[in-house]
Structure formats: C-alpha cells, structure tokens
Image 1 (cartoon, one colour):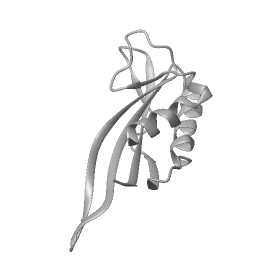
Image 2 (cartoon, one colour):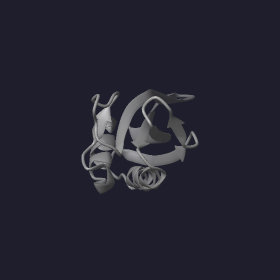
Image 3 (spheres, rainbow, N blue to C red):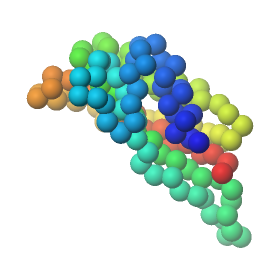
Image 4 (spheres, one colour):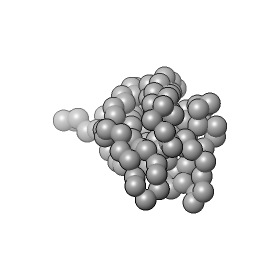
Length: 121
C-alpha cells in the first residue's frame, strides 16, 4: 500500500521522466533516475496493545550524470515525497542521509533520500 504511494509520487516527477525503479535500475537506464527500496515497516505498539499505526522507512537513491541534474532531481524527490497525502497517511518526513557521491566506475553521481512514513494500518 505505501510502496504504491511512493512509486506514484516519484512517477510524477518530470525531471525523472518515468525513470523510477524498485530495488535496481535496468543496466542501461537513462539518467537522472531514482531507485527506491523499503528499509523497514514496523507496527507501533502502545502500553495497552497495537496502536493501529505503522512506520515504513524507504530509501530513494537518486542518480544523475551531473551535479545540476542531481540537485534538481533530489529536490524534486524530496518535494514529491513531502507532498504525499492520503487518508491512511499520518505523516511523511524526508531527509538526505548521504552527501553527494561520485562513483568512479560508472561516472554517476548519487545521493540518498530517506522517507519515513507513518500510516494507519
């Protein structure tokens, strides 16, 4: 359910032109692109039992061939995730966990945006 919301939010980013992939990008994926994966999904408990709320954490890897494209795509990813709304969503908080990195072998710049989503289960 939450993964569908994440994918839909990312698919709406014009800077990515539909290049949004779960877990792994195709070998010759165009850039910029985003790869998302679920890191965790944990039900929150209260002293008297289940709270009915869970917290899902997703990592979104943003890849680009240049710094300008990376900055634009990363800002768009954060904006799209922060703007997610739905009746089952309590809150969405994003953070950039890593500074921009350059991968020598592929010549690609990347950064990671983490989205923590609290939702009614």
